[in-house]
Image (cartoon, rainbow, N blue to C red; front, side):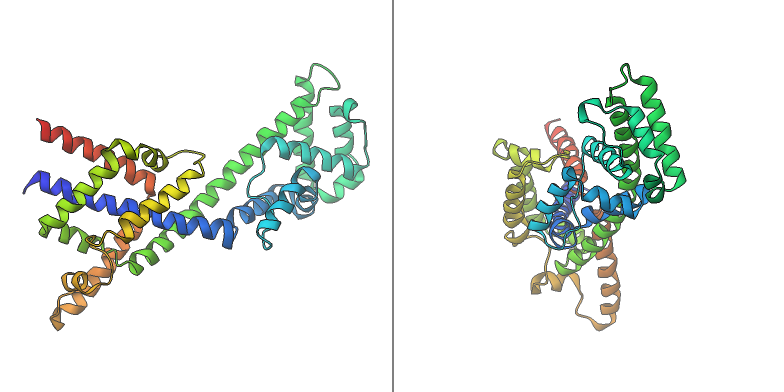
Length: 326
C-alpha cells in the first residue's frame, strides 16, 4: 500500500467533510435564527423551568429585556424574544420584577438586600413563585447580605443571582447542544443525499483516480497553506464570536470549492453515478445499500463540525509535509 497516496485520499475526504460541514452550518444557522428561532425558544423554555411561566412573562416585559424583545420581533415577527440575555441584565431585571410585584418600592440609591428579602416574603411574590424558589432566593439574599460591607450595597445580591443564572443556563445549554447535535445529523443526512456525498464512493474514486486525487490535493494546499487565505483560516478555527466578515468569506469559499469545483466526486451527474452504481442488475441492490451506508457515514462526519475537520486537516497536512521532506 502506498502510504503517501493513502494519506492524500484521507486528506481529500476530510476536506470534503469540511466543505459539507460548513454548508450544513450555514443552513442550520438560517433555520435557527431566521426560520424557527430555536435559540430564543430554548432560552424562554429554560427560564420557564427555573422561574415559572408567570415570572418569565413579567421578566420579558421588564424594560431591560423588553427592548431586546421588541427589536427581535421587528426583525422576525414570529420571534418569542431575545436569543441571549447577559447574566448581569437578568439579575437586575429579576430584582426589579420582584420589587415591583411585591409593592416594595425603595429609592434606587437606597435599595438594600433587606428590601429584597422583604419583597420575597410578600404575599404577591408568594403567589407567583413556588416555595422552593422563594427559599432559593432567600438563601441567595442571606449569602449576599453576609458578604456586603454596607447595608445599601446590592452588588453581592446581583452577583449571587448572576452566578445562579449562569449555572442554570449551563445546564440548559447542555440540553440544547444535544438537540442541535441531532438536528445537525438530520440536516447532514439530507445534505449528503441531496449532494450525493457518499463516503464510500468518494474514498473509492480518490483511490482509483490519481488525477482527481492530485487536483483535490492542490486545492487543499491553496486553501490551507498559502498566506492569502490566512483570514479564511481564522474564520474556520473554533472561536466564540465570529466576525461578520466570516459569513461572506465562508459563502465565497463554499461557492468556489463545493459548487464550482466540478471534479469533486459529488452530485447526481452521469459520470459520478456510473462509478457509484454498477449497471448490472444483480449488483444494483447491493450498490444502493452501499450508497445508503455511505450517506449515513457522511452525515455522521458532518455532525462533528467544521472546526473539528479543519484542525484534523492541518495536523494531517503537517504530517504529510514532514514526511515528504525527510
